[in-house]
Length: 340
Image (cartoon, rainbow, N blue to C red; front, side, top):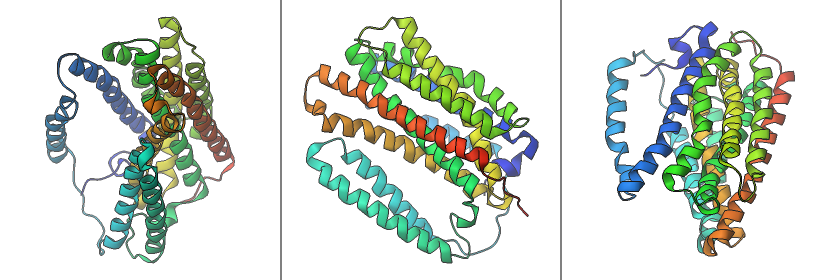
């Protein structure tokens, strides 16, 4: 079994390690759109997916060869909980996908309702499980607030990641490659700042850094929403870079709060919760963009209507970031849990 961050690194360096992890993720985010633009400039869209096959094989090989193993505690695997969680996640992701078409909104409603039912069943199962997939005991106030802050921040990021290419390519007439380059300052700043933010989180209160980062992130998203029809290139680049700066200052300290708020013996489930929370929130953000296009009628209307809807939905991203900031401010007053 693969160990978690807290089982590999000392607590005093947890923030720095999480910052390095954020840097690596940002490098992938930075390279992905640019590589996608290059692929689309010379090849067909299926290559956007085929390119991931050798990358996945290489990553799997590195995991098997480089990461140490440890013996997990004994106990029967929580199969019922795992199946309920998997069903809830699948229904959520499929439901969000169906939001992109007016004719399938009823399917989306059914799938999201099933997600809620499976989610409720999952909680009931976990309350009784001897070795729960996601132990409910780790959901103290500070952990929950950090998770909610992460959810709404990644929701805002997910909205922006989907809406901005619409805006750049339709309103600003950028090519796929040019659109990727306009977006690149966001993850590029995270590459530089995230390790620094993580190291600071090992010395100063992570919750304070998270609040500062989210305030800047909210202002950055607002600047993107207010760019207008014909902004100069420098303004677009500055806005994406400023938004990335806010997110970089927030992410590593908040992730440190998530990991340190759970007992060390539950660091594996805490890391899993951190990652699935990011996936679900970004998917919800992408669904919000689809929903905006559907409700405005822009999905079947002119390109100008699509650009207008993409710009308008950026204000939803701003709202998500503002909610995340409120969660982080509340986290400032939450007691630090004492683990035994």
